[in-house]
Length: 169
Length: 367
Image (cartoon, rainbow over all chains, first blue to last red; front, top):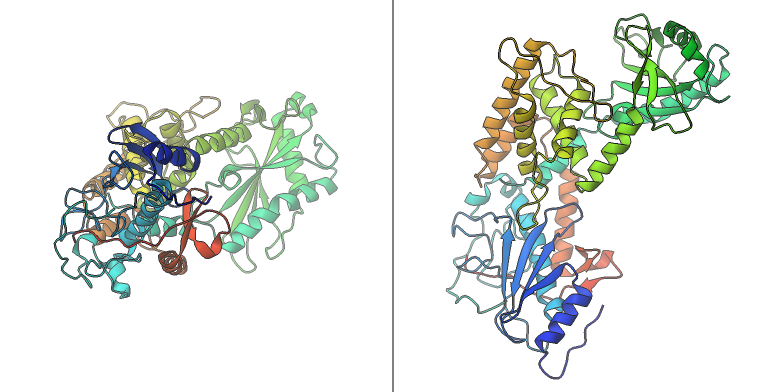
């Protein structure tokens, strides 16, 4: 599948069409704001997550990604899962999808990627995925990280600068 | 509850039988069949006797070493008119010279009480202990369907009784499919829990299997979370243990019979010979394990969680597979560089020609 970036902002109807055609795991549950709910699994036979994508009223609006099930495992430092905003929505990228990009082609793959690295983090205490500078988590490659508690792993953590929720996708 | 996926994957791998036993279990049934084909002692339904694997090996529910392989041999219906000893005597005579490479000639036993089959023991040269045995069960098949209700000799050798081992295997496969493959691993885990915490005494391995079967078949555990999310294996295991305790663990009071563990196909009590003392011990083991796991149910402490599971399964088997974990680490590094979504899962871009490229992104969030 390859989406063509449009020269004008995409309408939400176009976003919906793309989701319907290419992301059948996600179903729109609401308009204004537009909400898609999906069952997502990052490996065959693995955990199934229930994800809500709350996309606002127009393409390019702030997108929130929530994991409704199961409850994600928090870090000890923040009491929240890694790479999440203050209210608990997931931070899947350090930039939002632009009005010219399909959510189905950007946010959804980012969510898959986020959960893949979350599952590896659960097992190893290391976040293998790309991280924004200043927001690195568990960058150690020390093998002992695996034996450490998720809640007590502080290896390689850098204090994060203050961000406002909704700054990024 | 922490999922500890690498540990549960490693556990499943550690519960696989040793490679040599696996190979032996795969090669034995045709050896038995070919041997019986050469024998004139036994009348079978076809010139080359038809055989089927039964037992846990055939159903892929083995947990640990394979100590025996059960094989069904479809015998001629004319045996129905004869005393049941006849078929067992004929089968024993036919198996007498069975030889398996690498083992001393098999010692055939049929005269034990509670025996519906011919039991052939094999020893390594110089060893006194049987290393391996096969149970060859003579079966009368009413028609051509091997999964139909079959007749086997009764343990008292006085009559033929119905059984449906192959039908059960089919039902288990269907159930396992309906539960996205969760049932068979849970059976293997549960058998291991029994073996680790109660190496001697009953329940027999098959009874444990049937209990797990009923937990899923009767819907005693929720299939999904309320919104459709799944349970991880750690959560599921604890649910299964609680369901088994609730269904089968309530008969410890003096004077109460041990519980009915119903045959999945025919409904009779497969655990009719469960000694009460063993049953009471089993309930205590189950209760202790549930309490151990309940203590980490809300925990996010990895070390504490692993320790609890090691107590339940044994630390020798609740181990990550270093090779597998190294491969996953390599995969994670590849996915960090370039990934695709193919077939509903995320994979390194290099390993998939089709699928959606995941556009570059960086996670952040207030840590």
